[in-house]
Length: 512
Image (tube, rainbow, N blue to C red; front, side, top):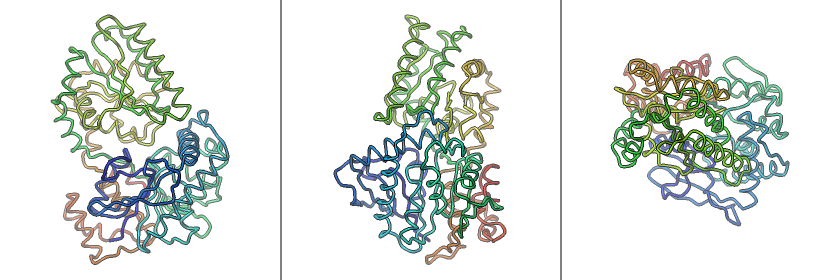
């Protein structure tokens, strides 16, 4: 089996400390089962960053590096999070651009390539993650790496007209094309990138979601990130009877709970959400004292000015809402900026009547999927979801809204609170059907299988292809009659289809 080398901005160290957030949830299972190397930033800022710190747990080797203060500011705060994050989320007005930060961003990626190269074996599969590392595939190729390289973008990809606001984006799009496979969360992100590659890099669109770039053929695919819905459901059921969920329920005194769980981030649509909540209690006064909103928005990226401005805006909105509409015995909105553990949040989701997820733009949004998984099938809550979240493509049985329309948010919340049990159960069942057969492990296997085919790299190791696929089928409880079919996928006419046998209709179309 080819060794897997994952490169991401953060690494979920077994000793604690640095965490990779949602990426850790998505990839931990695959790395534990397959083994390999995980490389990324340690989370530490130090005077020197050119040394790899290595620790090993079970079959995974974790290699991390520090950033210097200048790199942390220029590469991480100002360019990755101050330029690329808002730009790729179609929020160029929040961009704070300085050409010097772009140079620092590129130099850090080149240093990562220098440190990574000696670790690579010829048959390794390299999987690069997210917007922090857009130039890394090109940096590795410039250093004569011939490994199969895959890149996955966890956030959206904006249109070519939008990304052109940053002068570096043309060269970064070209750099991305040095990967063998580039994966996206949604079809629209794939289309936006393909158009940008044609306009900015001179790539030629080929049949089968491929781009011709010079003498290279680059494959594109859609791989929606998943959760382990069954495991999250079990956690939610257990935590609903825990101390934290019990304290929350007692504080509600019978009121219906509308729950929002987000990072404090401009892309999450929190000012628009608060405006919608205000409109709910102003227009539908019957819900005053009968419902309340708990918004947990964990503070992040405190050093970025747009995040500081957002916090100030939300504090003002929350204070005004509670002052204007609150009563001595009731507050319409509880606004918390301290984070809560994933397990505790699962318990909160279980007792909520409404899950409110309203990003103005999001790559996927796993919170929406977790809310569905957390529900009691006998008495489920209702998901109110922005149509601009990637998850909306799968979760179309939710109440889908335009997050910019406060009246639409208010109407959806009113409908969710008033919805009868039968409709709530029907909607939940339709949503659950989209999640129940998918896992992060399958998502990872699908991408890695597609990368092997895109790069034309035969699997290596003592086991043959049939044994490897048989083990995968056993791990994932695939029907036995599919094993032989899986073993013969990958012809020139129909490559990269391993994921399509076990995924949504959107994913079935990803690489045909």
